[in-house]
Image (cartoon, rainbow, N blue to C red; front, side, top):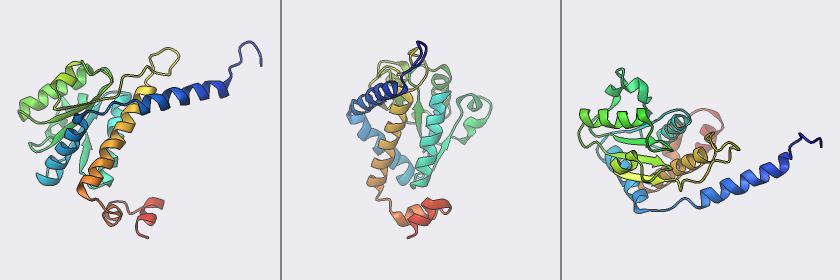
Length: 204
């Protein structure tokens, strides 16, 4: 290797070790139980839906969580926080529950969205996934799911890398626990996922 060459294998090993450790260190609190109960109560019992939101990379995670919930029996939509201020807030209904994703816990657009939602439907419950348990969003949420705040593996310490991995895993934790709590079956999955390999497999 030249002086400027990088050891991809070694860097890969370091990244895998760091992110694996971060995932294994996600702290459990009773807010995870509360978050699952809120989703089951508002969506399955009251007929509401899950409304996810995030900005930037966190917004992409929020959208993924929404689509995964949809395929597992929990109606969910992703609300872009900026578009919410231009009419899309109308998608929100009184029996909904919000799932907000912000690593810093102080993303301006998400803080503003929470305020607008509360003005429209006072007391609407919110779940926050964040890497900052002491943040404004964390203090205002009904359930705060703390990622553990592990540092990013990005060499600059800036690019969302480890944080987005942790957010995704927490989304999976919620989905799987809600599936178990609602007794969601393979037959029900097949009704919602007709196409592709998974649709075929679910009908076997």
